[in-house]
Image (cartoon, rainbow, N blue to C red; front, side, top):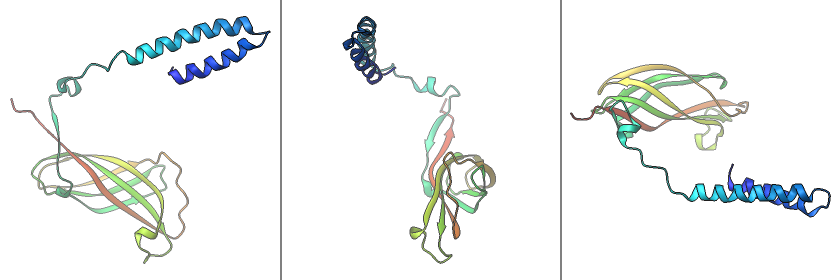
Amino acid sequence: MNARALLFLLIITMLLALTRRYRRVGVSLGVVLVALIFWQTLSSVSGPAPAVSDAQKNPSGLSAVVIPLDSLSLSHMELKGTGAPWHLSGEVTNSGSVAVNAVKLLLFRRSCSSATTDSGECKILWQGEHTLRVSLPAGASQSFEESVWSHTPVATPSGVIRDSFQIVEIIAQTSPAS
């Protein structure tokens, strides 16, 4: 329980203590809540949690490497469905020098009044992130098909639907030098 909730309960208890009928109950609950607030305050001030070493965080012995976003490209991207789930398909190409294991994508679904409307003038129906798990060596391409779930309600589209896809983060796993 956090200190704010305990303080709120203490105020309610003090209001009970001010009435004749519930005075004994209010005072005894007030003492208990003051003790809980004191304990909560001491436990939250006791200090930060101990630091966790990299070996404890990643027991497999692999270290994460972040590579530049322009070393990957997306093509033939398609988002079908209504969000329960969507079907995401396309092809990812690695032009970098490091093998890629994960790609974080930002997905946008827009509703435009016509096919010639600029994307900036379209209404955003939904946006979400999806992490694409791939095994993509340097200089290779890979097709993919995955399900993407919308965790928020999606408005009904009116007009032309336009989807866009943006790479947010690329993560490669490399073995540590032994």
